[in-house]
Length: 407
Ligand SMILES: NC(=O)c1ccc[n+]([C@@H]2O[C@H](COP(=O)([O-])OP(=O)(O)OC[C@H]3O[C@@H](n4cnc5c(N)ncnc54)[C@H](O)[C@@H]3O)[C@@H](O)[C@H]2O)c1
Image (cartoon, rainbow, N blue to C red; front, top):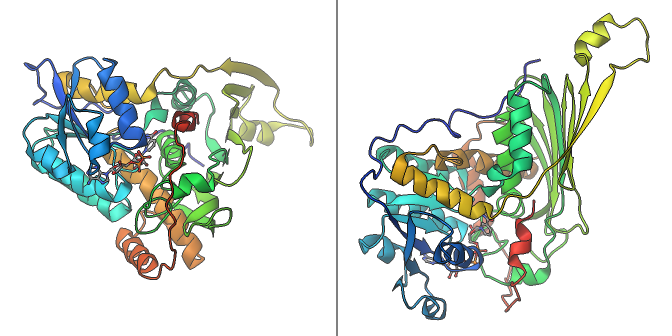
């Protein structure tokens, strides 16, 4: 049984970007998509929260949304913004299916890309986007995985990397505090449809948490998913999920998520041979075994004894504006070659997990990873073709949107 290790290959690896804009002091940024998150990015950029960045252009099909940004260059499509020559970099904040094509267009035009999560609507599209970056490695390609800057996850990663937990044997994440109402789903035509989103709670809400799992432990080797589709809402995609993971080294995992459960729960447990780590209510508790549990078991003379433990409690503050931190890191990567916190290519893994869980649930079998992305793309096309959902769209009050950031 080996230790599951934090992913280090892409994340925060030294990006030897010899072409960074050493001479240039300011990165001219364009935002594509002015919905909930696009407007949020615009707010902190306009408030000067990101050094070395200037928001100069925005794109959205709706003239009403563009009107709010009359002092910037405005465009009706992302492609027009990219082709305008007015930006050095874009933040792509459109619905999922546009992420890959817009990202590819931007990279081919020599524009740096920070793409919202998920980096694409499915694995094959993610691979296409990553390939476009591989063809232009001098450009910075990053993804908005802002949980990676939260002190609680950074601390866990540090403890694992230092070997403080010993060999990881189990991870359990009950992650059901992603409650969403019918009004949320009805707020846009693309939401919670195979055609508009490519999935449900996995590809949208808890994709961040799937990213954290693979960032902490690397990718599992096999996945078995159990999904309920439209269990709590009038939607066609999954809104209630239980998944089982197995890593090559024998470590196992259970991941449970839902957008229908209130109040919901958020408890992450990582069991290692040297102790148990529990994250709940923003408090990290580490119960450390004074001896490795496997060694103890082999040498103990009593049948019911356990290794003695020590308990450590670590309150964790919330990061201040984690999205702005990821954007700052993106800008620093362009200007100074700073290593990326969330390289775009890392976005493949969370999509792969999300796709594999749904695929496994649909075929009723365990799926070996890497997932056959073409098989999922075909399955997704079939789900889209067979969809009978008549989506009702209505005006919804989304002003409490930023409360969704706490996970
Ligand atoms: N990182 C986070 O915390 C976070 C939070 C929310 C949403 N997101 C992600 O951001 C994306 C957008 O989510 P949202 O909630 O803002 O959606 P939204 O529906 O509120 O906004 C999307 C906007 O994009 C516009 N748009 C669509 N196609 C376009 C195109 N080709 N060019 C320009 N504009 C286009 C739409 O008109 C709309 O205004 C999703 O992928 C979502 O997963 C990330």
